[in-house]
Amino acid sequence: MDRLLNRVNVSMYDFGLYFGYRDTPEEKEEANRRGIELFQHLQVLPDRHTPKICPVCEVEMGTSSDRTRMLGWRYRCSIPPHHKREATVNTFLERVRLREVGAHTVLMGMYLWVTGVNLSTMISELEIATDTAVAWYSYCRDVANKVAWHELGRIGGPEDVVEIDETHLFKRKYNIGRMNMWRQYWLFGGISRTTKRRFAYNQLGEVFAAHLTVNHSQHFVNPPQDEDPIWIAIGRLSEECVDKTWIGPPPQAGVVPFRIHTNTCERSWRELKKTLQSCNSVDLAENYIGEWMYRKNILDNIQGRTAKFLRFMEDVRRAYPGIGRNPMMADLANCNCHICVD
Ligand SMILES: [Zn+2]
Ligand SMILES: [Zn+2]
Image 1 (cartoon, rainbow, N blue to C red):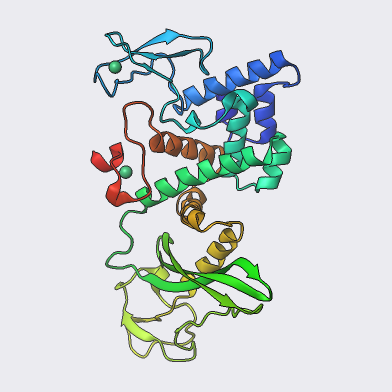
Image 2 (cartoon, rainbow, N blue to C red):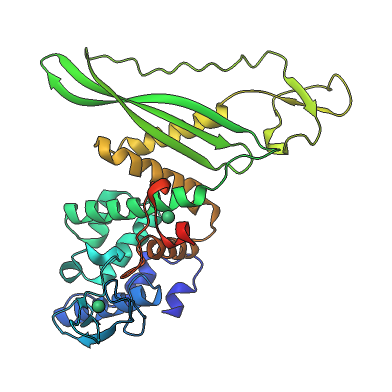
């Protein structure tokens, strides 16, 4: 396990070596056992020594062996009425059909999600069914969305500039003859020029009918670049916020050029819109936005694939802390998770 997780850039090849051949039922069983062990090491799944408090009795639960269970045991209260709880309750793996594919395959699927591999590559790499892959990616995206909002923190500050902008995108809903029903989404978001942290909200617009062509162009209200910049005192804003396009001496000493524009925001809209192209349901748009925030604000700042993978696993256990603890919600106002409450 250490040999696997101490590498800077763990690869699918390393996972393959670690899990061994997976041709015979015995080999698959062994790979699954190693997968569960790795999940336990990463604390995504509890082991028999992980204390859990019964949510009903509010006392520490014991465990009892049960070969029919996914982990071979489950939690059991020592006092009557002896509540029994699956070890996977409120974990990332609660909804995953672990028996069919094995814990090792789920782990590699999560790793591939972290590295940004697309769905069809994951399906062929892991030889799993399309709906299984779709479900896993949506579970990963769900974690990313929740964590991204928890980690956003305060955006902006006295020396920072936050570009705020809104844009819209259209998704075709259905065709009626030559008419298409289009649904319009408004996106409202911002990005810090210093930290590059970004956020976005989506708002569902009205469904409207239009002919086959739709105007996709956006109109921005940025002032033209050939206009003079605003001059501000040196040190008033961080270096990243100062205009880089100005050539020539400043009109007086001690000032630097500054421009009001949303160029950084527009760039990030383009990335977000690319991400949203694979999102085909209105209800999922929020999670796609969250995934984009998570990748840009968190994963992109971490060097090395192993470190990114370990960070994601840490976030998985924060989002799904197991029995007796509140799961994380994306909506911070209604979240009672241990991070929000503590
Ligand atoms: Zn109990
Ligand atoms: Zn919370």
